[in-house]
Amino acid sequence: MLFDNVLVTGGTGFVGKNLKKIRPNWVYASSRDYNLVDTAECARMYADIKPTAVIHLAGLVGGIKENNSYPADFLYKNISINTNVLHQAYEAGVTRVLSCLPTCAFPADQKAYPFDEKSLLHGIPEETNLPFAYAKRCLYIQSNSYRKQHGLNYSCFTSSNLYGPEDNFDSEKSHFVAALVEKLGNCNHGDQLEFWGTGKPMRQQLYVDDLVKAIPFLLQHHNTDCPLIVSPDENLSILRMIEIGLKICKKDVKITFNNELEGQHRKDGSNRMFLELVGGYKFTSFEEGFKKTYDWYKRGMRN
Ligand SMILES: NC(=O)c1ccc[n+]([C@@H]2O[C@H](COP(=O)([O-])OP(=O)(O)OC[C@H]3O[C@@H](n4cnc5c(N)ncnc54)[C@H](OP(=O)(O)O)[C@@H]3O)[C@@H](O)[C@H]2O)c1
Image 1 (spheres, rainbow, N blue to C red):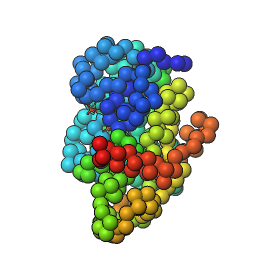
Image 2 (image 1 turned 90 degrees about the vertical axis):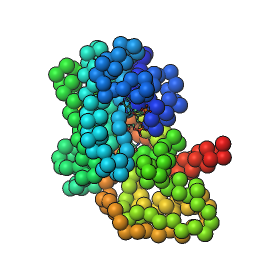
Image 3 (image 1 turned 180 degrees about the horizontal axis):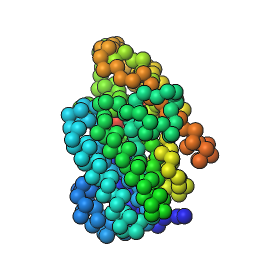
Image 4 (image 1 turned 30 degrees about the horizontal axis):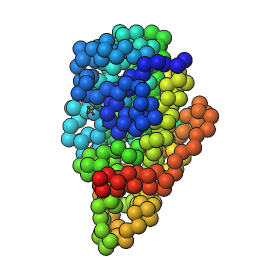
């Protein structure tokens, strides 16, 4: 089924801005247009836009520091936004909502890696982002409840850590790859750069273009209660990613690790179900994606 009026909530965020580059005709809403914590504003959004399908990206999103400092906001705002977006979609007669979950909603301790979709609710998420993770789990359960009770195609996909152009490079809020780009972009030959932990943990990093190219396909074809994991094949150590970054920025700097806040050793999710649905997918290598992101960042600094 082709949808003629697609609404993207969170349309002004990192993912939304990149999606707009390939689907400029969709409608992209921000919190300034409609504060989705507020039920009446959310209902007004549906009345104004009259979408036939919704891609739900809006939420209060942040790194460990923000999650740790504002746990009440992360729980209340995300639960409210998700509840409003799905229930008001139902009230407005919208039959298709595709929502985005993060891999941090999955249990922190997994029996095996890469973990798969079936494990989503089978264990406790990482302590540092419990409120955010549980709000996202509720989004998953809410989608499936509306699917079951009302026969609507409300489904979810899960994205692993993202990086790329338009990411948040503010050192107070950024995730690892954006922080690495920012550090390498601003340092000089001979500098010493310190990183958290030991460099040994392994992480999957998904180039944002790879996710946004998959979203239109998922909107058309993902019609099950499976929280499909979209994750790259590569699972690299922090040290390896830093080495790749150093090769690309061509700066001669000394790297040290402070052995603090190490984080989980690995948290990679399996993309097997996603690949089965999409029928094969070429992911951008970390080296290629980092180079594109670094070049984009440096161009912005020059402008
Ligand atoms: N970034 C990642 O690494 C990552 C990884 C996995 C999954 N995800 C998921 O991907 C989705 C998008 O993430 P992102 O990185 O694009 O986030 P982001 O850059 O922080 O953008 C958040 C978006 O949500 C909107 N928003 C926030 N509060 C709102 C409110 N009260 N009412 C209406 N809109 C509100 C923001 O609008 P304003 O611009 O007006 O503030 C913005 O458009 C989220 O569901 C996130 O969990 C992200």
